[in-house]
Length: 171
Image (cartoon, rainbow, N blue to C red; front, side):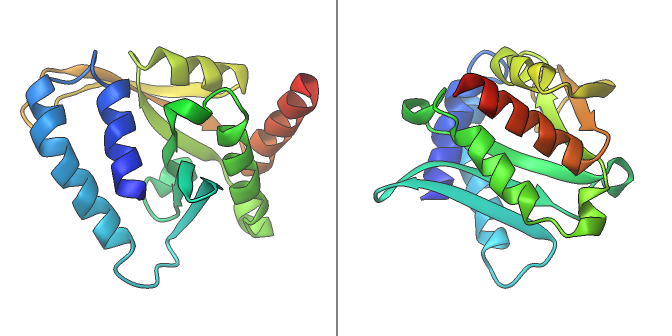
């Protein structure tokens, strides 16, 4: 189930960023509400891709089209199960999702938010030539302040090209 993977990976990824109490108690409820809302009915404002390995979810991504529109198309979630990391799952998810964008959306920028302390994700976005267009300190849910980075690519097709170039270099 997407919710389970989202919670497990968030707890693991953010263990050194967010308080343990929040990760154990509040985060699971927030993710459940988020995904219940996303799956409540047809929604043309989002695009969700799921990578499966048999009956198991290997990863997922979710683009949101009408949030943060001033920065382009928002990549709200990109998570890959620990077991499937470094196997091209994230690249494949992004590649497949972006290829479904209509021609107008292909020309828009793509952006995402990431905690600066999420060094694994930051390294990937740097390798894909993402540009940090915003840095800010945020305090959510009464937790300590953490630095948040907004990465952006000038248009979706630029990110798609980077993904394809990296895939051909690693195969």
